[in-house]
Image (tube, rainbow, N blue to C red; front, side):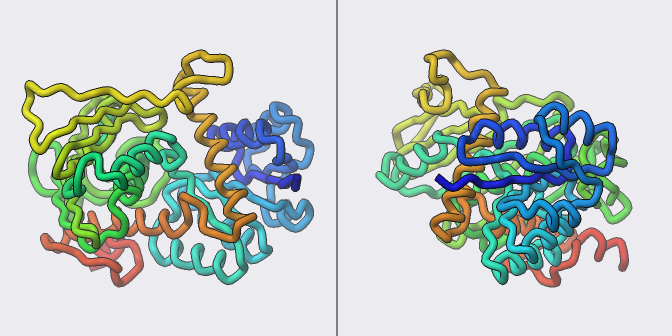
Length: 372
């Protein structure tokens, strides 16, 4: 069995989560970490018994020569280390969102392709067994032909920030069931009900100082519609409720003969209803999958253990993609397409019209709007 040597760039909270997953996989060895904060670097190294700690990630890549590098930094620092690793032939597992703009995302995907490097994005919901089960039910025709999806954000954030945080997961989740998007039509407002304007464009940490840095954002409440190339339509709501509710976060998949509801950002709650219509007095039937919910000892998994399990599934899939020379299940291409959906959400609002894929030009639409 080949042992994959893995290094991590960015040793904060997510750097610890990824390190936990790596340490639990028999065919993985955590060999090094890079971090500019010396206290954080020291604590991470001691926690995971890693001695090769660097403040320069390129030096780490050159000296340690890992097989895989994990990039759990904040969004502005996804592009440079991904390019550096790909140019050295090192496979990349990067946090979401893929980048700040589509120019960066295109270069990341292209550089990985040119160097025969597998490139995965941590859209962790793709690892859930529930989603595989839903896909199998759709393929079997259990709810007829899928015609509509309705998705809802979890609240706790304004739409601009949420698009670059949980919205990228929600959009990727939609793409898992809908495929490639043809066009976007979106409308963004402020809490007082007025339309969001160029004067409302802000940096993520101006909107919420505790959020990760994801560049420029716009909007407090939002509504986006997507037409997929296969004819499916999707509506997404970002209602900016002050309190987060993970049980409200998710998707209803509506078919001609039934519908499926899937909820939660990490673990999954799932329901199904059979029939051409669903009225308020008709119940959902719950679906439970022990492969996600129950651990090896027969105990119910908590949220933390489910997250760790899914993180391990993501890492395993990247390794399988390397060995089979295929795209990972949550690929860089998928991450780029999600960012494109986010950017077309803003661009459609600016134009007050449908915006078709691919989006051109590829620079940040909010930067372009501010510059006019």
